Image (cartoon, rainbow, N blue to C red; front, side):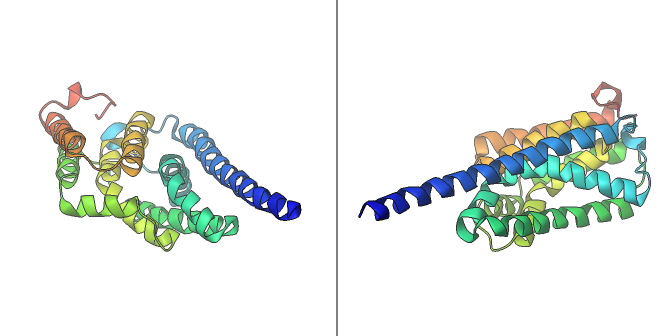
Length: 225
């Protein structure tokens, strides 16, 4: 009987330890990626005229950005996967999740061109409008629920955050300031349930930012020109 009690106590303790290790590793990797991304982006920010550099450079930078920006908000999903399938399933889940975001980066590299403030403002307006759509809300809800794989989770989170990420690319993909702002918004939307009292004013603020960029770009922080 005593042995059985000790085993029963040890199992929850081991599970708690594994959960703590997974969470620490996830957040630690995100923190390290912030350092790497900021160093890589040093001197690269030229606003809407930003160049992406070589394909290899940009993809490496994009991956470090996605780890930094997306992993903190993915921590609950990572922990659910660790609880449901064991710690050994975590690397595949995280790897396939980040692979989806890497493909987004490849698409960005293929389509991106230095542009003007009007295009940046139009993207910001579109991003704000997207925040109010049922499609965005559906992806956001699914991003907060349990999913079968990291790939599926990645698709849901891309659908939820794509407007904000395109706004980052349009304003200045190499801007640490805008990267930080977007990262905070993405994190909040992954962890906090949707609430109209918060989401609608945020969407309107993004639309307002886009309009301001179009009519008075010099007044917007982050050196768009």
